[in-house]
Image 1: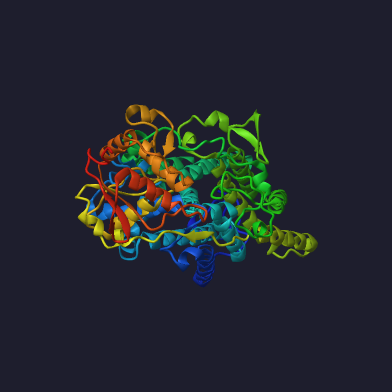
Image 2: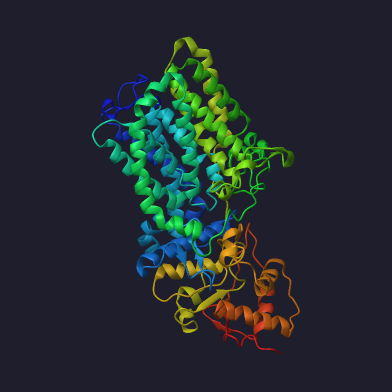
Length: 629
């Protein structure tokens, strides 16, 4: 689509633009391999804190999400070995279960990582996928840019590293295995560009491959796939209406539509059940569990530097994001100005075909920028409700109602990466007449990229798995199909119980259910819940709050028989057979929760515990415990 220059002639590239460099060299693989090693090295550097001790180190900025994805890894092994539903889990949130299709199930990853999860543990699977996501994203963007846009490997390499390790993706590396799968976008876009290939049955092959990619992408990063589809649609429309390439677009129309028909059939067949579960299955909900106005990008964030960047290290960080996992733009003033200048320069010097491509790319970037700002304008932590933005009209529409607007800024990363690749390719072309300008631009590239060089992810200590769980001692106290819980009960800020269940699932054999957990679910059960927006975790019961207050705030309530009766009802509802208290309770952001207050509350509620495998254990007789006093 007037975007390719260096591809071989046999690849059926669009004819509207001649190649600016010779065809690919016969021995490109050493260059590709070298870049793959560089990308992997960068990824290991970013995740080095976890690799030093993956069993007792946890991401300090997102303890809960790491526990959730480790749980998914454990459940993946349970799914493969027990034949359970990959899109609905009965073991979590007893007795209702969790709709994993309405969450981020990363099913393909959990299945592929089954051997690693079983033999090394979900902790190793988590950090392995996180590292390979970052490295794979850099390599996928490098290959995409090298194949479709630039002839210079250095230009593609620098831009590939930028796309994978941009501040937004480093921010999401704090626990989000879905969003760090940035390789999904270039791989899907690559296949979309191939849909127009002429030749016998190529439309069938290309449509089939795209359908398979969409099914895989939905499993791993459904929200990111949605953004990629939007970007492709905007690009194709804006490119097609350009006068310089209109004839090309018309000639390709029938082939592309035939291929898309195949894509729809293949993707529809593969995704029929997960889509049903997502939109109409049990324990589903409408929209998202997060406030879309709150999770919108502050305009000032585009001009700021992220906390885990070199600029942030020198104190140039601005606290204008919802939290440290959502610093999705944070390009800094130099890079934003450089990208604007690059767009203008490249467009002026491009021939009509390439100008049509640049125009479409620029509009895609503007599209993602505007959507990222959310329903109303925010600037420097101030909300201007009198300035409504386009997302206000979109937020009730399907799919848009489930997205967090700030994350649309990740689409701008891809656009900036394309412009960066084209600019560096232009600079390395060695045009003597533009020596001074090229020197200034090369200096600007360095000045723009240096402040956003990432720092390693922050880590903290987390409670080690107690022998009570690790050695399977719990099996003596919980029958097959029974329920067990750590105290406090599992949720995003008290995630130990959920990850310890993950480790048990990864070992195989007898399993236990747990109440609550960290996930997205409905506000209420039944059809009413499907119509309402989602929430984080299950609606809390009184006994949830009793132990959370003790652990989080150190508050020890004076209990009455009414409290015991409420706990008795809650325990019976959950089907609990036992609860236990580990020697240590992991908090978030380097905080250790108040174990002494939790223990005092549990003793007052349930009496004296047993000491088993390094934990304090209270057996529960359903409908009987705790007894009145």
